[in-house]
Length: 362
Image 1 (cartoon, helix red, strand yellow):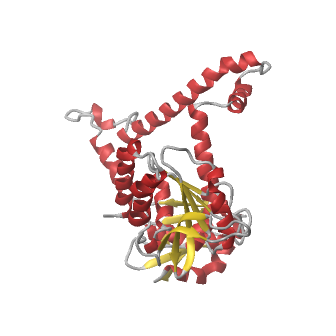
Image 2 (tube, one colour; image 1 turned 90 degrees about the vertical axis):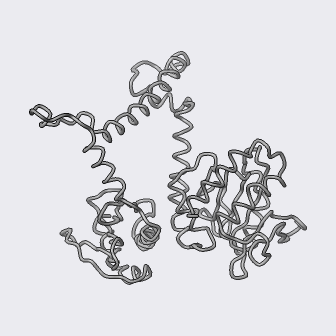
Image 3 (cartoon, helix red, strand yellow; image 1 turned 135 degrees about the horizontal axis):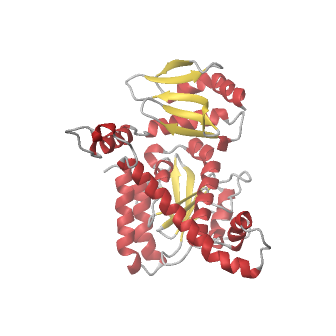
């Protein structure tokens, strides 16, 4: 079973059994241990890999426990604190994680109720766990863009450097997506005021706020629906003029359009290797610009790494679709030179060229 399929299977289990889980111990047995075992790939019955009720005395705090510690090469790498699945997660639930994070070698901590997994690291201050997660996985509503990042935490693909290098962007992108979703569901006063003052010339009084509360919510919902409809129309080829339709013996059909769109979409497959190569290029580029400015776009023939999500600012191209892999670097005239590589580590040997490309745009 592929990694994505295992995540989907656990999500189905969560959906079917969540209402029957009423205690923290039941949450661990039904959801948390299967996540550690089937998703992260660690043997929950091997004390050399997973230590339940992990104790690391901190100062005057003696005998406090973290629910699970995941061990790699004899060192604690991931700490996990569990709460009952019927409860919501709050930062106050992570008191042991905060204390233990500073006294172990762990760079990753997870707070979970078995359904929602909040992953933390130390972006804000070294050896001090951040107060906000860099990644939130909700098994009741999976964000597919997070699957490659979760895979990096698994035993077979554990890549701490890549996780940490991507954590800052993940943290803010995820937080912004959750905030935008919340505002679309129930607009806050600030959200209402922000848009009202751009279309209403009068004073923003309490009466105006109440009047526009429903209007902003309605406009937001209609905007989303229209965007979805536009994508559907594009996929079906609506609005395209088919000249042959007026010719005898020709009929209008959406089949060629749909086939073309499906062919285009299905031929683009972003691989884990491409994403790992992207993280290496990004880590190198971070010596010149902030990490959130380095983005990626996949295409049929190559995987592009861009500055500021601008296709006019290519940092590098990863040609990983053939038997021979190439790293493409472009000069000031946008002429590309392909450098053959056999392993992803060889990208580091072209660090100067990557930094030069970034510096030209930055």
